[in-house]
Image (cartoon, rainbow over all chains, first blue to last red; front, side, top):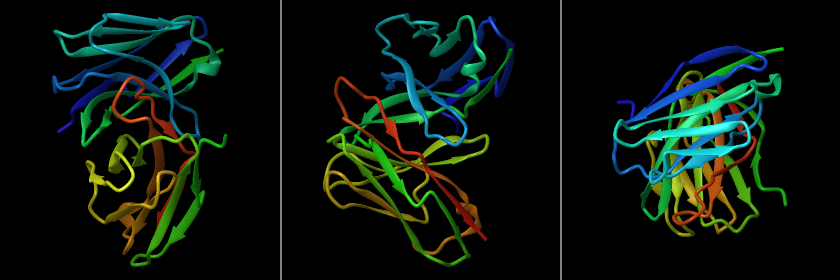
Length: 114
Length: 114
């Protein structure tokens, strides 16, 4: 059973456009929601994260929108650039065994055409 | 700082062979994690260690064992490799429960089991 559902699986946008990736979760025990960016041949790296006590967080061209009642959150990439082409993973985390444990979505492959 | 390092980078095994993947971090993090990444499946947690001396199973622990050798090092062992364990393996570390839950990933080990 997939605890974190991510869509779309792949996304193609033109340079300057808006990229939107959506995630939904089921377990209300999750209380930390990060997005990771992964380039080919590299490990994932944290892009931006949000806690459920706020509805939106913005860092530069990247924004997370969070809807606690719907148990959904999304990543918006404004003015998308070819350098943003990567795989993006959402995650939902909760504390277990003394550590924050993330459950990842299956990823979205983003291609930004010049 | 090197961050999270993993060895080896690539490995080819025959079915039934054993091997140990090594991971080390120099950020004085309490928590360490092992994930596998398969196409279309995202990152799935194999085992984690919330602190030195403790280990816990993640989502897909079967066929693996781990050792938290000290605060810096966390190894993953495949006792009898199977083709289903062909994957990219990532080690990660974090401060653990608390304010900063960012996970720092290593560059990965690409394992093929024939």
